[in-house]
Image 1: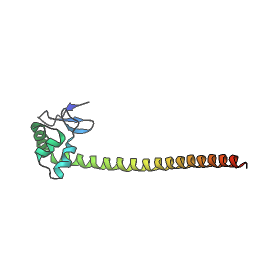
Image 2: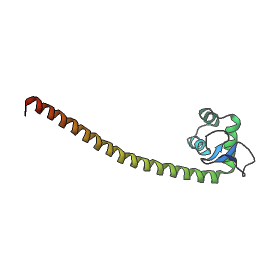
Image 3: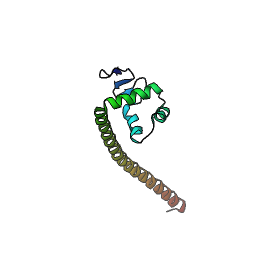
Image 4: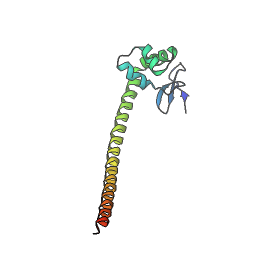
Amino acid sequence: MTHANPSTSNNHIVQTSRGLSVAGTRITLYDILDYVHDGWPPHLIAAWLNLSPDQIQAALAYIETHRAEVEAQYQQVLRQAEENRVYWESRNRERLKQVDRLASASEKAHIKARIRLRQEQLGW
């Protein structure tokens, strides 16, 4: 559910389940901060994220006005993303090991079947 953030007088920034976002988009202020921190100029950020000049200006103004709060949330988002990456990397590593074991068992069964067939052909 999306609703206007009561701490801002502009209706371009809303609080969503994803965090502070540009209204009408899935773009979060944290997405924008990635580019701001990398030194991108506003017009390129807007072009890359398909935002209007009004949307990027509203987002950047909100970030400036609430810098400490937004940066703290941004750091939390980065920590959560890293935790998710580590979790899924670990989980996938275990799953890949299981798949490798299954493939090995399948390969062994195939080899055993070929040996039996060859034994039959040789009359063993």
